[in-house]
Image (cartoon, rainbow, N blue to C red; front, top):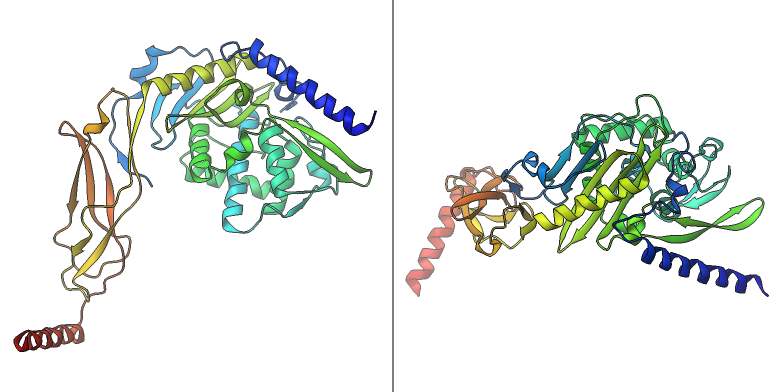
Length: 429
């Protein structure tokens, strides 16, 4: 029997086994079988949207669900509203959930054009020595940025993380400095990264709230990350001096197969961190981020994440508006032009947890009627105010669509001449 036929038979048997496992272990049980790739000993080793007013505090929701893990946060992605929190600001080891920030910096570099998905990345001796969860890259081996991202998002590969850190910044140390800089910019006040892969290290900590913040930044700014985090199984090819060989990637996030609303994102587990996850899910246009830290078992980690996500989907409804403003322009005093066009600053989002009828949301446009030149593109010129039953629920800013310079004497002279010419034309008509 040929090698190709044997491989196809093996793939068929594996597919049947996976299908049976999903039947035998429903979401509620979230069995730990097959978790070796994300186990403390076996995987990671020692490892501008519209402004929304506050519609109630997360603490008021605590009694509705019970989470067994010591630290957790549930956040709605588009607004950043925290729906549930439990010991959300305690700094803990995050294990491979660290890689959310690593992927964020990779996508930042892609957006900046400093790297490209088809670029070839060479693995250093240091990167190949990482251990823990890995894809067994060899020194001198090259893989594309696209493949490295798959290795990180799917198989939680420590070696791929370091290879990418070195490719982007020249060294892991400089990459980690940028990780901490990015974290500070996101308001991650309880975070300090020591490495780019999440292996246990003194002082390498973050909090459930901080994980939610960086997860939100990643999925809202770079939604294409879901194309990687939702891969269940895929093969990569090692091309080394020993020849070519295939290596199978299997997603460490079992929710990808076991939870129908799953969209990602990243698991992590080490001896110190125990079991962690940043789980994202989407239902009816609402995307949630459920962060769990310090769970005793993988089963507990996923069960808590599902409980949080289901709570959010059952509790929340989202109102969004990105329609063009009713007012097309605003008058400008003392400008070269007499008015300036109006643009909205972004999509307005409002997360309701009261069961209100969102069809009754009212909009009112308010503009600055005393606007004077000079005006710069992007300057605030008004707001759209949103309300339900007379209660304001938020607003989005209206901005100037272009620059309007302050008029000088030649401009006034030209305006006067233009008016005179126009008036004479009217007389003749």
